[in-house]
Image 1: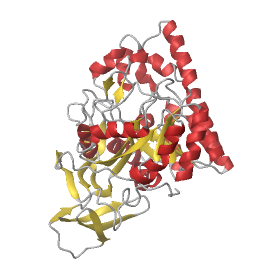
Image 2: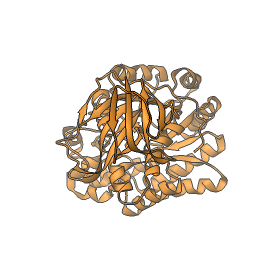
Image 3: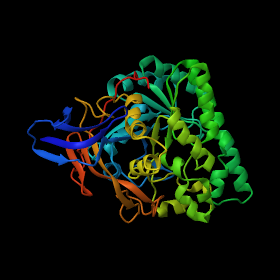
Image 4: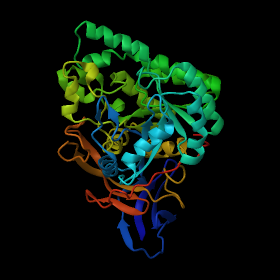
Length: 460
């Protein structure tokens, strides 16, 4: 089926023009003024913004955690993502210590295959790096199309690897053209503070925040940058939240090092005062926790300075009943926050509409940079001839309100209840098919495809 999008203001990371877009099948065939073509469907985008579909490279769907699972599965999560203008997500496969990477991939595929509405890919989280694991790295990069490997500097006994394992993994990943993602917080220090607060009877959600002070993230970010510098392996810090951690990255640039940085929408617009609402604060219990107002200012500046390349979500929702597992002990609150549906519109309203970022920067951090860093560009992340027709159409003037009563995520509260936004995503195309229009989903589960990714080669 062919589609002609007419008269839209077409925005990419590097361009801004009024143009028509002709789509034939799954790809963009031509872009230009007043295209003289016949199409099966015409979409009039006059007065609207036309942008690449969003890419969220940090989500956790149907993820096992503390004896339960995150409440969005691959069907509900990717549907909600589409409603919010995100056409591709990258989830995390978590290796079980003592088992192979391949066995973990098969477990995750069992939940994802034929269930996704939007396109998806995986990062491989390595929690047990040894000689057997080492032998799997090349296969994952070259055969599975999984080129990014997540490591944890926290959660000892379950997910954390030590610095010796980190160095070994970095060297192997670099050899084969991949990159390392890292959860950069000092796990030993956090574990000490959690135990201290619990021994003192301090069990409210506020102490989740106080157990992870800024220094725990700043120290680990600097240590990770040092190891990446030593090995020469490309490094990407996920969900960076604070001034101290970004300054560690800023310092790394003084030795001509590039460290990729992702922050998440919540760290740009929410702050730690929410933890003072007694147990209600559990809604925002995530790791790292929300920070201070000064950290928000640092992150917005970091985006404009080119130090922060990606705004993701770390979407990992839990029902309120699941959050209540920690009502008497903050350390038992499932960590996670629902945002997969809200990211793009929040970033547009709070970023573009309030003058914090330009339209081009919005596209860059919500889509293009993730596509480049993770080996999907130019198939994904831009509007160009030959690219997948993943396109969103935004009415920049339409106002609307976020609410759990109207969102499509499988979670019974919103971290942004009552937020009034300016700018609404009206139409979403995924690989040339209208997926969302007039607040209705037009695709079925199984339409989403697994995206094999290329070796890391883009420099941004």
